[in-house]
Image (cartoon, rainbow, N blue to C red):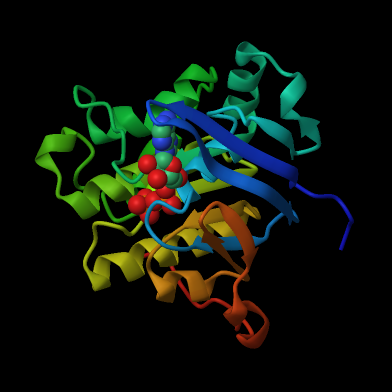
Length: 241
Ligand SMILES: Nc1ncnc2c1ncn2[C@@H]1O[C@H](COP(=O)(O)OP(=O)(O)OP(=O)(O)O)[C@@H](O)[C@H]1O
Ligand SMILES: [Mg+2]
């Protein structure tokens, strides 16, 4: 395996100022992720998982330390350059889906590809929606879809730009067990097929165990989870529905 890291983090910290004074959210974070890896970040509510994901995806800026995303140091980029790096290399599945209310499922999925000027946006969006089992819901607005259906639209949208790295913040957070399993199957199938690096934040230990690596966030500090070394991963068998 090459020595290249698709994500590298050195001594990252994040503080914010609050009415009660400075609050440290993350400190001393180091991380090295190889291309195509799947990685789960677990840990208690409020420990800093979403904050870290936002920093890694160049949605937010750290107080100190450095992040290299696909070899590029984020600290030297301005907001515009970070936005273009995100567009090229990163997709983000938000826990709250963040679909555009006024666009249909198909239009939501097409959007990133249209913005990138791809002529095949519609065909690719239709294909992806079919793959997530929503070929019969192309023209529904988000409010006309169930939670699990909206989450699958968000997953299809995240993959249309063929990201190098997919960040997903509790992608199964609001789903029943059957839907959670189905969503996870889709994520890992895409991870295998297009070698997309997966960085997931999850409270779902079954999902975390399906990743090659598990990291534990506790009070703003990140460590390898104890189960990571003792739980060998078997080949994923998940398939598209
Ligand atoms: N802009 C901010 N100002 C003040 N405090 C913040 C800010 N952003 C995050 N925090 C605090 O930082 C801590 C970590 O938040 P974060 O959202 O990263 O937690 P989390 O691990 O994702 O939790 P959960 O599992 O509940 O989603 C929380 O205590 C939160 O209140
Ligand atoms: Mg969170």
